[in-house]
Image (cartoon, rainbow, N blue to C red; front, top):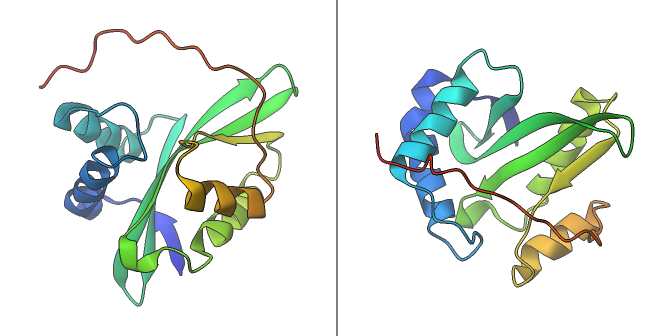
Length: 152
């Protein structure tokens, strides 16, 4: 598998994968097209805290990921949030998630924490993440959403 930075010519393919991902049972919140397009635009911009990656197999796009960078005071350093991680159906179960995690750990050697969210019912994803060293957090996550999910 080849992992590379998202490029402008990837916009359509990424949007299609995001729409499939966000419409699946893997996510609780179903984001609007406008939000997904804004996510892609932000990955392609010069924002320092969000990055997009493309996964390829034999020149074909097989998935994407978006990460966000933050600081964790609990661990005293850089935290990498794996916001989205999606592989097309025919590319799942091949160990590619592990390759991507290793890529991120190599790229962000100074990170003190890597985080991601997963639906408990998504047993295949949970097993994959556990296999790669991720553990279930005991924290109870709380959020406050501001109404910015409007169509543009």
